[in-house]
Length: 249
Image (cartoon, rainbow, N blue to C red; front, top):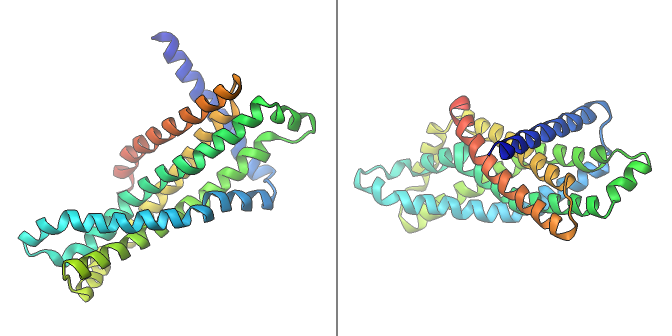
């Protein structure tokens, strides 16, 4: 047990030092813009359709789940507010982070892990190229901007999905849907969700990159590193959400 605890603490320390090193590089010697844009495309642009579709159906599912209860109390006019607040505060930041972890986080771990076991990272160091600046810093910057952007996209598509289900299937007044949503949803609800998504994006990127950067043991090691990266990042997102929610709201 003590051996496992010691290993856990060591990994946390290594990941923290790697993050601080990447953070220092970002401010002191930033990576090239083309590397950042490439990662922004991979993390954000290529995932936009997936996030929009999942957000749309998530908004529709919220309406389907809560309408019967609201109908009993003649509270259908609150449908728009419930959809927008639940998406902004909780569902969109968490779901987007988990989807980015599954899609982009696994790719980060596998990509960097493959470079590690094939000694490409060692070759970068021989060529006087900092692997952290080349591999990790661009991904951190890209995640910092693109995960919040995807969260906003998820909120918007979810609100539209909730609107279509509410008005077309449950005959909720369209004007009331938008008005109650505007009256009861505050800007701070959206800002709080964006703050969550920034923390989630940085965390999942750092975890995925760390496990890939420290991979060993050939092809099997890359597979294990990718699995660990996705699992640890997913659990970390849920744990952080538990602590961030009372702090922000």
